[in-house]
Image (cartoon, rainbow, N blue to C red; front, side, top):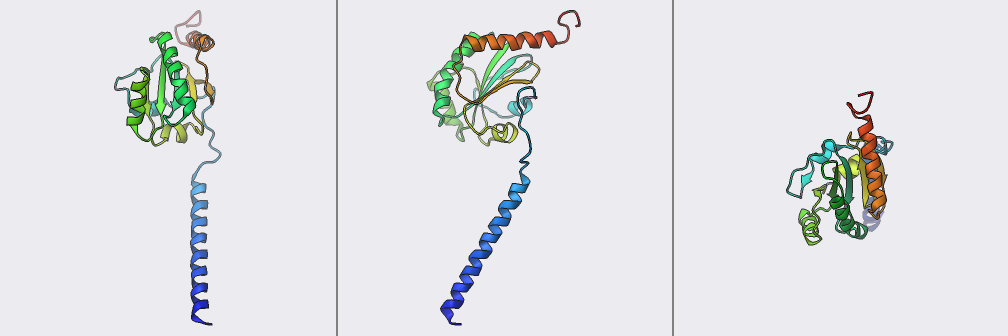
Length: 193
């Protein structure tokens, strides 16, 4: 066999070996992912402890306990998210802060981009940063934005919303309904308490 044919065969063998290694690696990585792992849905517990451990980009502390939460996952690169934020601020302003909290979770890699957006649009509700997608992707399985969770005072997801919403009076009625139902099942409420 001539030298050119030998080099060509050697290169082809090397390329085949690379593709085989990459293929095995990809299969191994895919095997590490728990494909059957269900992500939290309505009726399941929201990972509040993980939320509390994310980077608070608002600068002020928040106490989640005993409140109905609206947790909105957003990004500055997401046009529907940017359009939704002013309406979320209006909703936050309209809700009783003793019973409700609107919380934003930015998935932007750069916290400064999120902070600039928050300042520019005068967003005052609490915001966190999940730049490594540990909460959004790993724990909640979010693949599209915006994504909103309404969480009862007991930490149970009551709604998972995978689209932009007009946060109007109907949503406020829904919040009141969730709050009333939570109060009815809380210890010390009514005749069974």
